[in-house]
Length: 253
Image 1 (tube, rainbow, N blue to C red):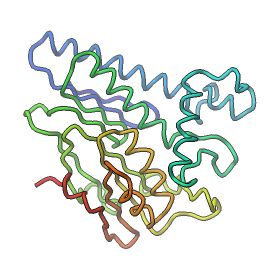
Image 2: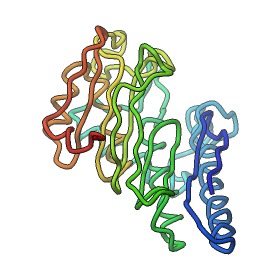
Image 3: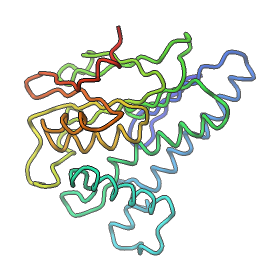
Image 4: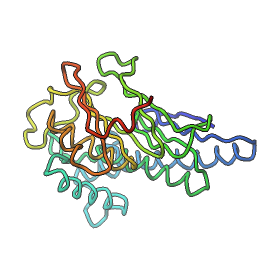
């Protein structure tokens, strides 16, 4: 089964290959549970919903000792990522508000994948706005293959990658504009690169480091090069691509 819904302001797709009818029915049921998880994440962490826990925190209406366990977990993960990236991951935005969206999406995708996996499915794909966790094989019995979009011609693909039990996350300004910034100079826009893709085993790791690496500009690809288990593909404002030394292991033939 394959279904897409708009949640968290983006298309979210569950693709669970299932042959016979009972298996398809089970796939539909577990996909519903995974979609529900994304809805709950949006209701809690959205900075756009007035009544979300995140919005109430930013308005000073929700004391720290009242935070949910999920909120405490995310804030802790954000603090750890800030340390892991020498400060290039920072959830305090230009207005001084907390915005953990740079880590929430990957975390939510991983949780959704765990929900599906725990139900006994070994082949599936969870795609949230182009950030993907792929597990097992596709409906043809082959590893999942996805494309990296051309940031200058968004209906074209510049590179295809094979996700054999792997994940992919992309940060960029070509769709949402200047929503990622350098935490060490919050007044400056990032203009030297337009797209930075990270691949690895786990979507949470790929997503958080893609955000931090993009915030570093052209130096971000060097960060990904140094991180074990992750590879990267960066496109600069001139359209020139730079990839880490092991990225070829993910390239589709």
